[in-house]
Length: 557
Image 1 (spheres, rainbow, N blue to C red):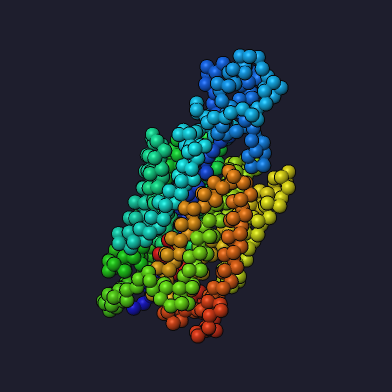
Image 2 (tube, one colour):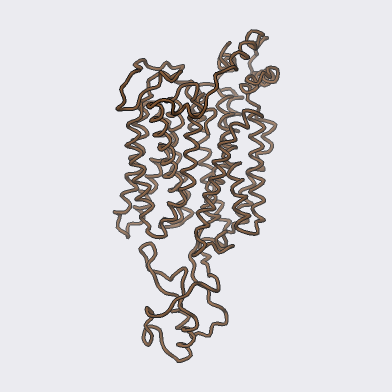
């Protein structure tokens, strides 16, 4: 049977039909960019201090001295969670005593914020933190909110590929788009933190499912030469554009409910795409629905101004397809069937997870950087564009291990240097964070291609899916790395930088896939450095095999 790419070769690679699919599917990714990072502003923590009751009978001096001073992030300021005992302050005020002169404040008894908190409105008018007082004893709920969003992402990445395999790419694309947009809208009416968090988890499921299915649909419809550009530049850069829009929306809309409402509008605007974006002919053919696939292919030919062949499928090809569908079944344990395969799998799982920790940790930590939180978030999004371009160039010219390891060393190394920057050089610290984000983002975007090249055809999609799910585990724990900054502002950078450098070193022990043919079975898999090399490939992959690399990504999670 002819390969699908041979079947549609008469359409050309970059006609009006392909350009339309490329840009519309890329545009559908934009809402994923700002929904994926929306917790940065929805769950922003403004400066706060204990509220004093309106009836507190205190003099002006004692009102000003009612909050203890403490060091936070290397700077002294009023305590966020403690106040001096009001009963004692009222007695001192009634006696006419002065704080500091007549009374040693360091000896006074303290108490919790029994009357709530006062929040600064300089950055945010309201967030879920100010709405439900997620501070002090309840401050653990803030990172948990973000983590549960990524739990939804984990669940969505697990089910999206299976659903699209069963019900079709287009149907699941728009169904998950509806889930993401619809439940974001319902979140606006949340009456409790628990309700908001459960809905946020469902939004996470829709967000990643929409992203994955759009990725699959594009790689299946587009031709070989365009496919790798779509999977590395098209999808990623439009995600970054959505990420850039987030701080712009948040800057002008500082109430969390109205911000959520604004973030749902682009999803609604995607509804008309249902009548423009086609189903994947490749998927229809795999389901034996040849007539529907033929209609789409002939319509594409008409759009491109090309005359389609009189016969696209013959009976022999249809019969061959049925035989091909009877493939050997594989299981997740096949990724650990030999010592070499198990070593590759374990190292790949760690590589994905720790790279994800660095990427999401730096992204979520932007409000804690010195300077304007909105500008810092925008810079964090902008830096991703050159990172994706560099990754694309590295994939074309440099061996995979050195590309990924080098960018991880760059990212992790500069993050470790942040602790050495003098406190008065705030701009330098921000520059180093952005440079670290650049390196880690570049490495992250290369992992799909590299992982797909390491595994044989039989388990390739399973391997990419399993390692991708490992990255979701990294995103779940990343908010807690940010949370550690409340105790020491350098601690998140020390941990993320150390783990990133460590995984960069570990990457050098993985096999090099660049310039080698894709393995077709377990015996042809390249071996981990240090293992006895029983099978070595010296032949250079043909241009056709290089072009086929993105096909291994079509079920990537």
